[in-house]
Amino acid sequence: MKPSFVQKFNLLAVAQGLYITIVQFLANRFAGRVVTISYPEKKLKMKERFRGLHRLERYESGEHKGLEKCIGCALCASACPADVITVVAGENDPADPHSPGERYAVVYDMDILRCIFCGMCTEACPTEAIVMKHDYELADDERGGPQGGVNKFIYHKEDLLGREFYW
Image: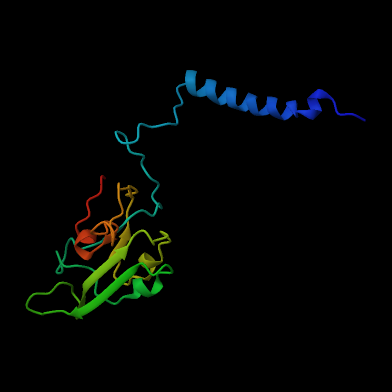
Protein backbone atom coordinates (compact mmCIF):
# COMPACT_ATOMS: atom_id res chain seq x y z
CA MET A 1 0.00 0.00 0.00
CA LYS A 2 1.39 3.37 -1.01
CA PRO A 3 1.47 6.04 1.77
CA SER A 4 -0.74 9.03 1.29
CA PHE A 5 0.54 12.59 0.94
CA VAL A 6 -0.30 13.35 4.60
CA GLN A 7 1.51 10.25 5.85
CA LYS A 8 4.48 10.76 3.55
CA PHE A 9 5.29 14.23 4.85
CA ASN A 10 3.93 13.61 8.37
CA LEU A 11 1.69 16.64 8.10
CA LEU A 12 -0.23 15.82 11.29
CA ALA A 13 2.94 16.16 13.42
CA VAL A 14 3.91 19.35 11.57
CA ALA A 15 0.46 20.82 12.21
CA GLN A 16 0.65 19.95 15.92
CA GLY A 17 4.05 21.60 16.21
CA LEU A 18 2.88 24.71 14.39
CA TYR A 19 -0.20 24.88 16.65
CA ILE A 20 1.99 24.95 19.78
CA THR A 21 4.26 27.58 18.25
CA ILE A 22 1.37 29.81 17.19
CA VAL A 23 -0.36 29.55 20.58
CA GLN A 24 2.85 30.50 22.41
CA PHE A 25 3.49 33.37 20.02
CA LEU A 26 -0.01 34.79 20.42
CA ALA A 27 0.03 34.38 24.21
CA ASN A 28 3.36 36.21 24.44
CA ARG A 29 2.33 38.89 21.95
CA PHE A 30 -1.14 39.77 23.20
CA ALA A 31 -1.28 38.54 26.81
CA GLY A 32 1.88 40.39 27.82
CA ARG A 33 3.84 37.34 28.94
CA VAL A 34 7.31 38.28 27.73
CA VAL A 35 9.97 35.70 28.47
CA THR A 36 12.91 37.53 26.91
CA ILE A 37 14.71 40.15 28.99
CA SER A 38 17.04 42.92 27.84
CA TYR A 39 20.11 41.30 29.37
CA PRO A 40 22.76 43.91 30.00
CA GLU A 41 20.22 46.46 31.22
CA LYS A 42 18.07 44.02 33.22
CA LYS A 43 19.65 41.11 35.03
CA LEU A 44 17.83 37.91 35.77
CA LYS A 45 17.32 37.19 39.48
CA MET A 46 18.71 33.74 40.15
CA LYS A 47 17.16 31.15 42.45
CA GLU A 48 18.47 30.83 46.00
CA ARG A 49 20.21 27.50 45.34
CA PHE A 50 22.03 28.74 42.22
CA ARG A 51 25.79 28.16 42.36
CA GLY A 52 27.60 30.99 40.66
CA LEU A 53 31.07 32.45 40.96
CA HIS A 54 33.05 31.91 44.14
CA ARG A 55 33.88 34.36 46.88
CA LEU A 56 36.03 34.22 50.00
CA GLU A 57 34.32 35.62 53.06
CA ARG A 58 35.49 37.68 56.03
CA TYR A 59 34.00 37.79 59.51
CA GLU A 60 31.52 40.65 59.60
CA SER A 61 30.93 40.84 63.35
CA GLY A 62 32.15 39.53 66.68
CA GLU A 63 35.66 39.28 68.06
CA HIS A 64 37.12 38.26 64.65
CA LYS A 65 35.54 41.13 62.70
CA GLY A 66 37.44 41.86 59.48
CA LEU A 67 39.56 38.70 59.59
CA GLU A 68 39.48 36.16 56.77
CA LYS A 69 37.43 33.06 57.45
CA CYS A 70 39.88 30.89 55.50
CA ILE A 71 42.31 29.10 57.81
CA GLY A 72 44.37 27.52 55.02
CA CYS A 73 43.35 23.93 55.73
CA ALA A 74 43.08 23.14 51.96
CA LEU A 75 40.06 20.86 52.44
CA CYS A 76 38.37 22.73 49.58
CA ALA A 77 41.29 21.95 47.28
CA SER A 78 41.24 18.26 48.19
CA ALA A 79 37.47 18.04 47.69
CA CYS A 80 37.54 19.71 44.27
CA PRO A 81 37.12 17.06 41.53
CA ALA A 82 38.46 19.37 38.79
CA ASP A 83 41.61 20.40 40.71
CA VAL A 84 40.71 24.08 40.42
CA ILE A 85 41.91 25.37 43.80
CA THR A 86 45.50 25.91 44.94
CA VAL A 87 46.05 26.69 48.62
CA VAL A 88 49.41 27.42 50.26
CA ALA A 89 49.14 27.82 54.01
CA GLY A 90 51.37 29.88 56.26
CA GLU A 91 51.76 30.49 59.97
CA ASN A 92 49.56 33.25 61.36
CA ASP A 93 51.38 36.07 63.17
CA PRO A 94 49.65 36.69 66.54
CA ALA A 95 50.58 40.39 66.39
CA ASP A 96 49.01 40.85 62.96
CA PRO A 97 46.57 37.96 62.36
CA HIS A 98 44.97 37.29 58.96
CA SER A 99 42.55 34.66 60.28
CA PRO A 100 41.47 33.47 63.74
CA GLY A 101 43.36 30.18 63.46
CA GLU A 102 47.04 29.29 63.76
CA ARG A 103 47.37 29.29 59.97
CA TYR A 104 45.99 31.26 57.07
CA ALA A 105 46.03 30.96 53.29
CA VAL A 106 49.06 32.80 51.94
CA VAL A 107 48.10 31.79 48.40
CA TYR A 108 44.54 30.97 47.35
CA ASP A 109 44.14 30.64 43.57
CA MET A 110 41.27 29.34 41.46
CA ASP A 111 41.43 28.55 37.74
CA ILE A 112 37.78 29.32 37.11
CA LEU A 113 37.78 27.96 33.55
CA ARG A 114 38.38 24.47 34.94
CA CYS A 115 35.62 24.79 37.54
CA ILE A 116 32.49 22.69 37.05
CA PHE A 117 30.52 24.65 39.70
CA CYS A 118 29.64 21.52 41.66
CA GLY A 119 29.84 23.15 45.09
CA MET A 120 32.06 20.49 46.67
CA CYS A 121 34.51 23.16 47.86
CA THR A 122 31.79 25.01 49.76
CA GLU A 123 30.58 21.79 51.38
CA ALA A 124 34.10 20.79 52.47
CA CYS A 125 35.03 24.13 54.06
CA PRO A 126 34.78 23.87 57.88
CA THR A 127 34.64 27.65 58.40
CA GLU A 128 32.31 28.46 55.48
CA ALA A 129 35.02 30.72 54.06
CA ILE A 130 34.29 29.95 50.42
CA VAL A 131 30.78 30.51 49.16
CA MET A 132 29.18 30.46 45.74
CA LYS A 133 27.19 33.61 45.12
CA HIS A 134 24.62 34.41 42.45
CA ASP A 135 27.01 36.11 40.04
CA TYR A 136 26.98 34.42 36.65
CA GLU A 137 28.82 36.88 34.41
CA LEU A 138 31.91 35.00 33.31
CA ALA A 139 32.80 36.50 29.95
CA ASP A 140 35.72 38.37 28.51
CA ASP A 141 37.00 39.23 25.07
CA GLU A 142 40.27 37.30 25.52
CA ARG A 143 41.57 34.60 27.77
CA GLY A 144 45.09 35.85 28.27
CA GLY A 145 47.59 33.37 29.60
CA PRO A 146 50.94 32.39 28.05
CA GLN A 147 50.21 33.89 24.64
CA GLY A 148 48.38 37.02 25.75
CA GLY A 149 49.68 38.14 29.12
CA VAL A 150 47.91 37.65 32.42
CA ASN A 151 45.21 34.98 32.54
CA LYS A 152 42.07 36.85 33.62
CA PHE A 153 40.34 33.66 34.70
CA ILE A 154 42.80 32.67 37.41
CA TYR A 155 41.37 34.39 40.47
CA HIS A 156 43.79 35.12 43.28
CA LYS A 157 42.99 35.53 46.97
CA GLU A 158 42.67 39.32 46.68
CA ASP A 159 40.22 38.96 43.78
CA LEU A 160 38.08 36.47 45.69
CA LEU A 161 38.06 38.51 48.91
CA GLY A 162 37.24 41.80 47.21
CA ARG A 163 34.66 40.52 44.76
CA GLU A 164 31.61 42.75 44.45
CA PHE A 165 28.30 41.38 43.24
CA TYR A 166 25.45 43.27 41.70
CA TRP A 167 23.01 42.38 44.51
